[in-house]
Image (cartoon, rainbow, N blue to C red; front, top):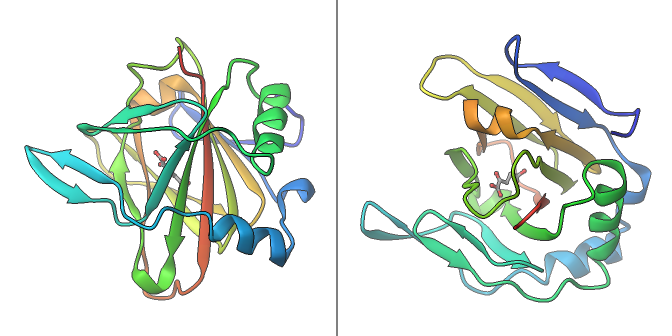
Length: 194
Ligand SMILES: O=C(O)CCC(=O)C(=O)O
């Protein structure tokens, strides 16, 4: 992994890694606006306990379909704007990464993602999950699965997180909403699909 990643110990066996403010990933206003405006018009629909629920953020898969929470996010082709994020992650984190899922969070709409562990049934064994943050700074909250307490990691504009597979099994992650958030954040998450 790239030497600029710092590690955070969540437990003696579980870590998460952060690279702060990668200069290539701090987009100028025009590029950020372009990426922001590429969000889908409609919210993605999940099925939770048989009930259809709209995600409290916009989401779109690129490159590979992603199945989670009773739904499938059908992928669009990877765009020219997105491919540098994938190329960098392949080179510096894991060569097997091949699919992206973008999340768009509008603070004025109270967008968030609730605590969950990523669905790994379609992912390659032992592959990590990478999240690149653009725009408004938020907190990335890790909770021991079935346990108590949490660890918050600040994810600012241009920061990269790596969640190893064993950490995803043992900890949930979430991006909560707080009243102070009124900006726009995009996360580019990368996974290695089979
Ligand atoms: O927005 C983020 O950083 C996290 C996204 C996430 O948890 C997911 O796509 O599963």
